[in-house]
Length: 144
Image (cartoon, rainbow, N blue to C red; front, side, top):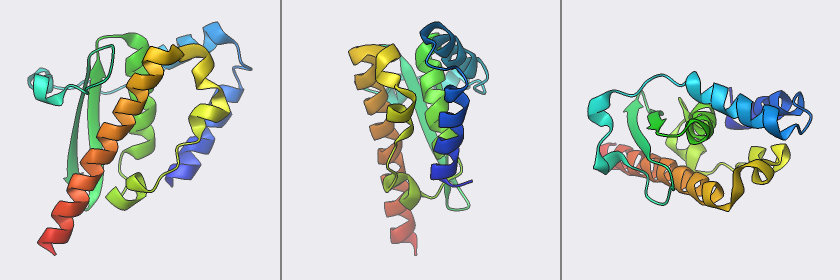
């Protein structure tokens, strides 16, 4: 699936919640519970996303030219938010990640239920994922 198709799918899922704040937060936390666990040895200071109020660990690897992320957080909501980003960006090419316009947050009205601090943290997660994509893109260009 393309990044756009995945975002459309997320928008459709959240539309079923009909703007119910409590159900939306519960759903985000549920998504976080489904996130594959991150190996404990990867939960290091080097892998902490700077700018998040909660602790968020994020790593990335490149396989067959595509980027794959692993992440975890010490809070359920933040873990759910990072799981959405992983769903969107996992298995995508670095260029696609770098050139993506993330629109799903506005369409689902995310700012209503995550607040300013988490919005800043969410932006920091996106930035970190794009930095990984940029590093992999540069590495691939040097290698070719």
